[in-house]
Amino acid sequence: MHTNRSGFDPNDTAALEAGEFAGRLRPLASPGPLAVAVSGGADSLALCLLTADWARVEGRPLTALTVDHGLRPESASEAAQVGAWLAARDIPHVILKWAGAKPERGIQAAARDARYALLTGWCRRSGVRDLLLAHHRDDQAETVLLRATRGSGPDGRAGMAAAVLRDGVRLLRPLLRVPRDRLRATLRARGQEWIEDSSNDNPAYARVRARQALALTPALTNRLALQADAEAALRAEREALAEEILLSHAEFAEAGYCWLSRTAPAAPDAAFARTLAHVLRHVSGRAYFPSQRTLDPMVRWLRGDAAGARTLHGCVVAAHPDRFLVCREARSLPTTPITAGESVPWDNRFRVTLGRGRPGGLGYSVAALGPQGWAAVRGRAARCMPYRAVQAVPALYADGEVLAVPHLGIEAPGVAFSVSPLSAESLALRPFAVV
Image (cartoon, rainbow, N blue to C red):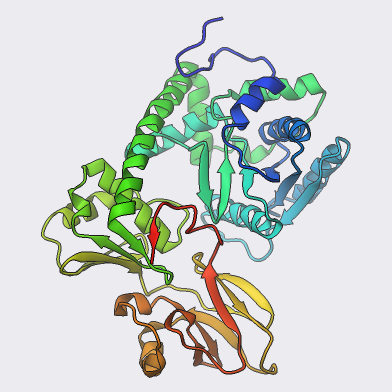
């Protein structure tokens, strides 16, 4: 049987065997327990069964996670059905519910963000580092097509990565070179049913339209998947160069801002753009890199006679005589209520914890210090940092009064308030010098 250079045969519809799957997962997985996201569709259910077999052989704990978005009347019963199927195969299963009001517009994007937040949140709380996702070759082709229509740069054309860090959890996609038909064949071989989601056929969604277009031209699916492979190899090279630049030219502070040397922009265009994208994503706390379209003007500005400051991706980039400051933009930052004994995420950058101390009765909240807060506490600050950066650090408020700002060494008597990176690993996993 002919196999092309990427390692898959576009006409192969055979069930995925345990040995082949192990060869795809083993290079990606880190030690310890695993979790797998299972919607009940054919793709994720096949991934779950394959992973369960592999985990048993390897002696690795596995938990299947199903998110009930509550967007369709049947979603709860479908989640329960997934649980029943997995229970029959002795696979532990947890249902995570998206609670609260749902937006009227942009529902797919909001549901995706909520899904990832629920999944990664469970993993962090449970000490699970690796979360497996069932994106396959056809999904990859759809992603590349969609990004091409939106004018994505080379990173976008590389499609989804097989392993990526999100909110302190490693998202693994071991099936990116496996066609959708093989996953369905895998379930048929095991006598396993699956759930068909009617929204997957709704042409109101751009991804569905891309899927329908690719179904008419199977050769294009293969070509886009091959393109993603080639671009991914180039992306890996840019990534390696970016890591070298970050090691020698970037310093990240515990308070979440970064100093970037004036000589960093002298690196090759693509490598510096990748470096800057990393810095902006890390400082902003966002899950995604800025688009190439928005990044290019910033790169040109930094490579020229940069002066003053510009904003991008929720960050401020300010020119100093010998370096650039990159810090969180001090606007649209959340105010998060917190109670004694509680630990909550804040701005997708930090985890804030309020110990049990003072008697109750006060209304505690966590918000950015801001210029007014800084004016109120500047005389108590035991540490220094750039004024632009200090405005975006988290502070504990009680009935409108600033009580504590850990990054400035400001504490409140009788109140134990601490701040740490959202994930204990989020800085350690990155090849940056942290100061």
